[in-house]
Image 1 (cartoon, rainbow, N blue to C red):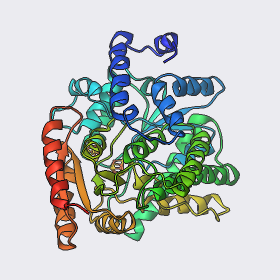
Image 2: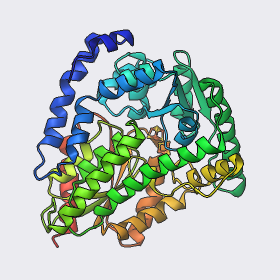
Image 3: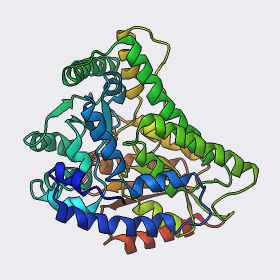
Length: 425
Ligand code: SF4
Ligand code: SF4
């Protein structure tokens, strides 16, 4: 990585502790990613983005701030980036995916909090992530109890705006979410000093829809008999989508897809012909959480799709682009976002239906339902998911994990046994 020490110092980061993180990340990335054979050349861009993760994009965000833009840090795929970009702001995902930040979160949160929340709070309070330092405002939501309370702790250190997400999917809940988007729009306007107009909102809707289209195109390759890209690489791209510049990300992902088209024509795939195909479902895998994909694919199987927020929940369903008024666009945003099936909703049958649909679309042989330790929502919902899949005759393995490597051996054994149970093709 180039030398960004001055930038990190200016962000008031804890340089000594941050150095430790900079030492471990390249090793982990090398072991998990660069060790793969036969990767598409287009992955070079995403390798570069990760190798410069705390440098290039943070530097761009700071430049944008100098030019007057505001940066909004988000933690959930329900927060509509479109509003932020319409007002000339920049939205960037902030979810923490590394064990490195967990002890910092545990200084103020109960140990029995999910690692995603602990890592996110730790990254801010320990001052070891530039993205968490740069954001002018954090945008939280009322999805789970741990997050709701974490916003109050974070708000003592950084401005936090919380969106009140309905937790049912009745018509009045979509109305409520539309109103909530309106209130967010007003706050974003105040913060940026810019008006959201039908013109700039229409452009922002197109911008984010185009990112969704590129991701959908990428995921389509994973439906093929012999996918030309690994699940690990697709996960990395999904994770980078949360914080990269959306225009550049879309261009690079479409360029990669052009290469994948060619690989398909040339019959180039990345897996052995008899590789078992796995759908991963459950809690999100924030960067740099690559543990499960790495274990599954090291065992010779293919992760062909993620029914997760770092996966299809992020890009499926476009916002209607035909609206011309601000009200119409806000309504279209509310309707699109309310189609996301998060376990914070009751009931959440849509998620189970999605898993079954995706099993067919991606020709999955089995499902691994993943729960981040201490996430009660997905843990409890796991019972319904696994029972329903069993009734449908779809093999399913429920797993709980966190960000440490301590359970890697046990996971490997359980996943290995599951793959064996799936039998050979
Ligand atoms: S799992 Fe739920 S709370 Fe978490 S990012 Fe997804 S929609 Fe948001
Ligand atoms: S994984 Fe579960 S507990 Fe953790 S932030 Fe997401 S919804 Fe909340």
